[in-house]
Image 1 (cartoon, one colour):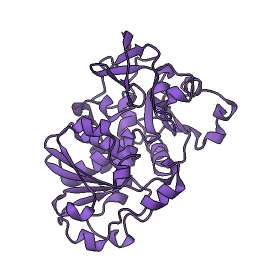
Image 2 (cartoon, one colour; image 1 turned 90 degrees about the horizontal axis):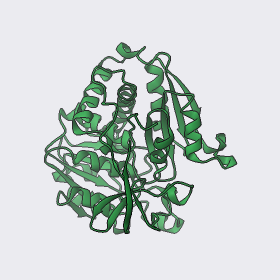
Image 3 (cartoon, rainbow, N blue to C red; image 1 turned 180 degrees about the horizontal axis):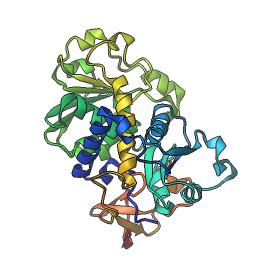
Image 4 (cartoon, rainbow, N blue to C red; image 1 turned 45 degrees about the vertical axis):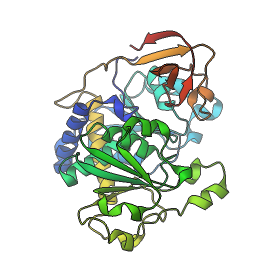
Length: 368
């Protein structure tokens, strides 16, 4: 089952593979009708265990525009999970009906676990507050198409950086490119997780106010404060209006700065910004459909430059009497074997959610 390529993390593709994918995305954007029958006879499983508008519909539009078909569900109540079926069993079953699966799940690591039992490629369409690699590809294509390249930029990421899976994925992917500097703009309570900051090492700084850095930015990536990720409504209400971008703040920015947002937005971008030429978040949604068309083609081996069928095997380590400490990880919500990868000394990362743990290695094997 593991001889297929999946997209679970943005780091599952090499920089060269991402560049090829962006090139194909740009070609599709210029002439989408040229690709109208590429996926004729193919079926996408659209499995959304969590609400979604743009991601789900863009995947389904992408497959339809490629001439394929779509089956699936848009809420967990429509699935056998309500009867107690495990995520891995659900995927094992549905992968027998489909050629490729796009999956969103509120539990971190669920798409990774699904990829171990799927007969077909699995695409992570968002797992909890962990990762969202197809939004990252959308962001990269938007930058590439509008700026002409992805390098030598200072990029501000603003808002909910703690729970924002879009920014986690984007930072990981952008770290592959030359001379990218990050500015993390957030309140202390919503700052970027340490595992992301460790990934980019000394290529970032942290500030508390947009005004402190906006004049230096080439790209500003705004995010909403996500009510659904908070355990306390009082904490959400206290932080939800931390950052609001308006015309006054934008007046200090570069004339060619791009403003991106994964959407949906609440009030973090004032509507008076929408008509500014630097506001490209609605263009961004259309690029999302084009890059998902390209991704489906790549994973199904239907493009001129296909992906290698098997990626370099990843490290899977079993630790004695050790579990992931992340309560939202699938290893703590379903009967999924905890697996880890080595970071340094006695520090390991959860293979599903990247949470760091301490443990003594007793056995390891290599993924097929």
